[in-house]
Length: 261
Image 1 (cartoon, rainbow, N blue to C red):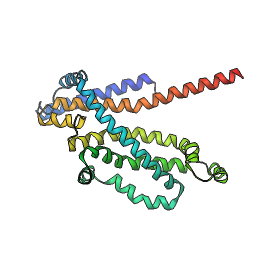
Image 2 (cartoon, rainbow, N blue to C red; image 1 turned 180 degrees about the vertical axis):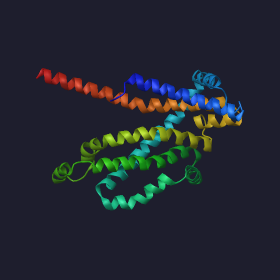
Image 3 (cartoon, helix red, strand yellow; image 1 turned 90 degrees about the vertical axis):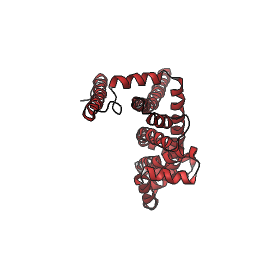
C-alpha cells in the first residue's frame, strides 16, 4: 500500500535527525569538537549562510555550471543514445567509451581536463563527461522501448530526420530521460562542487568550501553540505512540479474543449 505524503515527510525528518545524531556521536567518539561540531553550531552556521547575500552568488555560480553541463551532456548523450538504441553495431562500438567514462576516477579525469583546457571550463567539461553515459543510456533504452510497428510506419512515410526525432522518439524517451535527469542533478551538483574545489573557481560553493577548510571553519563546511542538499532537493522537485502544472492545465483545457463540443 502506498504510504501517505505525511508519513514520508515524517520519515525524512527522522532520517535528518539520524544524520545529526551520527555526527554528534562521531564527535564524542573522536573527541574533536573542531572537526565534528555540534548540530546546533552547524544549524547556526547554516542559517547565517542563508542570511548572507554572497551565499546566493555562490549558489548561482554552481547552478550555472550545472545547467550548462546538463545541457551539453543532454545534446551529446541523446545524439549518442539514439544510434545506440537503433543499431546494435553502434551500441557495441560505443559501449567501451561509455564504460570508460563511467569508471574513470574523477580526479584523473579532472587532472587531464585541467591540462587540456582553461581552469574555468573544467567544471563544465568534467561534469558533462560524467553525465553523458547516464543520459545516453536513458536515451538508448527509451529508443529500444518504442514499438517496432510504430517505427516501421514512420519509416515508410519519412526517413529519420529531426522532425521524426522530435515528434516520435523524444516523446517516447521522455520517461526514461526524466529519471536520468533526476539522478543527473544529484550527481551533477557533487561533481560541479568537487571540480570547483579542485580548480578554485571564483565565487562558487567549491571555492567557499576550500576557504572554510583552510581556516578550519568546519561548521561552515557542514552548513554548505546542507545548502547542497537543499539545492538538490529543489532542483530535483522543481521540474516535476512545473511538469505537473502544465499537465493539469492541458487536462483542464482538454476537458473544457470536450464540454464545449
